[in-house]
Length: 388
Image (cartoon, rainbow, N blue to C red):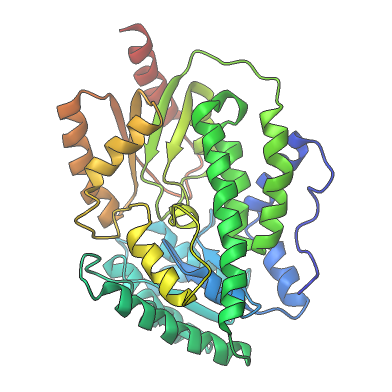
């Protein structure tokens, strides 16, 4: 499709571009996805954390990152038990309320609840709903071949939906588009780490997160336009603590919560929307593109509580993230009822206690509207670091 779905930012000053991204990010009717469908395009929704979007893109369809929304799950609540994280319910609510219309839905067995999401989704909608089984044992010598075969199975289902074959050249082109996107996001995070006063965390988040529901070519154009403008900003460094935020790998904290943290700290690294930055370097475009995708997931990737890889102990990876970002403290969070996130909190806190790195522990929920208590606690934490 050649029709653009997000043009309001084009040609505007940086502050207005960021404003348009915020507005789009907080619009739970997802107008860009609606425009895509109105123009005849198909949409494949995929649940957090990581999904090989290149396969959907290669079929000429829009990969849509299903990440919940700050809305009341009035219809979806009856489809779930009580003690589950918010993102499951609000994600289903988006489609039950017809704010989003999909042509296919894919989830992952990242936790017990997410593993059952495809079956629950499938009871309510007639389009294909399935699970993509990423390797449970990333250290097995057979993992790459297994994942290649799983990607190929998914590819065949997407071909049936698109009513067209996906060639290796289609996949190579998509790899190039997404390689460019990941490179631009690395540049965005480089600015956050090296000159965080030029880019508050909430602005960086808005610029990144909109890529989950617009064509990646449009996101690339947006980042190409904004990155030079950010680097030219005339903003002075302030006396703020540099922190790492850990716990935003699946359910996302409200944008206002991120904005609140930016008022008193520099968030120099984080795991927000980590699936968009899961692959750490360019994926080779030669040879077998599906095999290259599979090997990149296993051998050239970040970490999260939902991937089990003995080569990447979570506490060690967190310490590396803190060190590489030159951070002086960490904010360790988890979404309410998030079993993987809450389990890792124990290990993180134990490791931080041993190393003496200050940390602040909290929980969040995407529907949160009041942060007064968290803001007071965070400000007290920061003041103690500054004056002790």
